[in-house]
Structure formats: structure tokens, C-alpha cells
Image (cartoon, rainbow, N blue to C red):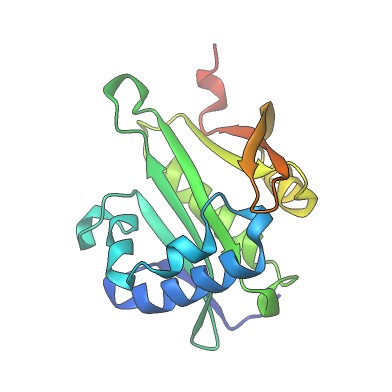
Length: 180
């Protein structure tokens, strides 16, 4: 793992770099993401402002970035359920690590940092995510971090060539003692 990696909250000034990373990941890994590369390419960087922490003008709990040698090479967004009866839940979305930075533990570090931040909020009890069922590396990363599979959504993604891909649904209890 590189020592020159910095994990921090994304700020408005980082949105151009976030869009560059996201566009590249969506184009290069169409099966890993629910978003469509061509459709997302048309968005401008400012449209991702909602993914930032509320203190900097966003609506998400946070988006973490991973910088290596001053370049944004990874990101992970955490959103909170908006409905009152479900506010004890958060969801991880858009985990990405640039191809040239993979294999260095950046995904694990982003995930560990996100979980640590979530555990600081006493009102949050669980965090969920979905992962394309064929993405074994990502599935194992989440499993090792404490996520368990609670279901599978068949035909979750319909690819441009007509193939369907399933999504595994996973949950991590932030407060294990609070389980039923």
C-alpha cells in the first residue's frame, strides 16, 4: 500500500476531478455500476455537488476521496435514508478506484474510513450497498469489512447488449448489539 495516499472528504473544489474519475470508471467498467457512462458523461461537474457533505453544500452524508501523488484516484459516497422511519440506515454508493491505483488497498481504506465515520453517528444502525453479483473482488472486500448478503436482485441491470446482471444486496450492522 502506498504511503503517499490521502483519504479525505471531497470538497466543491474536487468536483472536476471527481467527474473525471467517475466518467473513466463508468466507461471502463460498465458492469460494475448502475449508472450509464454515456448519460453521465453529459453531466457537468457541479451536478455532483449533492454528493458532498451538507456543511459544504451537499445533501449526502459524505463522499470520501483517495488521493495518490495529488491525484484523485478513488471515491466512495455515503447517503442517508431521508424517510423518518428509516433514518437509522445509510447506503454506500459509487465505490471506485482508478485502474492504475488498484491492488494497493485503497478500496479497503476508503471503506474502513467510511465505516468509522458512520459509527460516530449514534443514530445510524446499519449501512447497505448493492454490488454486481459477478464482481467477486468487490463482494469479498465488502464481506471482509463485515457486510453480509441478505438478498439478490435478479435482472437488476440490463446491459446495452441485452444481457441482465444480478445485484447482491449487502448490509453491515454498525451497532451489532442493537440487533433484534
